Amino acid sequence: MIPVMMALAMAVGSPTSPPTVEGTWHNPKNSVAVKTGACGDKLCGWVVRASDEAQADARDGGTPKLIGTALLRDYRPSGRNTWSGTIFVPDMGRTFGSTLKLVDANTISVKGCLIGGFFCKSQTWHRG
Image (cartoon, rainbow, N blue to C red):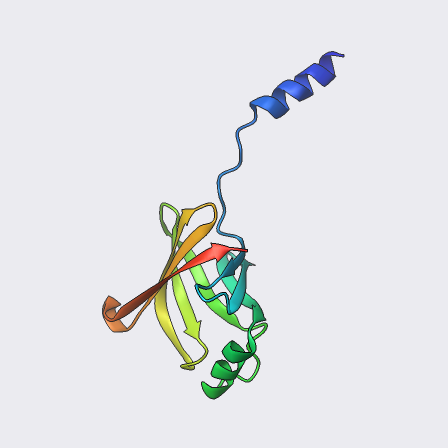
């Protein structure tokens, strides 16, 4: 009886785990879904779903197969709930310096910048 009571007390008293950046995220147009996870000691994200239009745009940019492509590459922690790495933009066929910030349990902000942090663009992605 005591082990059962202790298990119940531990379950009730256990803190919830903090939100994680790992999971599946959807871009603002919901045209692409990216699954994030570990790639060695870094964080990466791969396309797991893409609309026909997104796939056509990627092909036009020189990426023949969008699904399976790593968009988020080599992110390392760079602050509280923030990671820095590179983002591949398939419709441009280019890679840019990037930061990813976990805004809340269901929202990330992804920002990519040209040289030296100038000419940046941000998007808000939601957990799927």
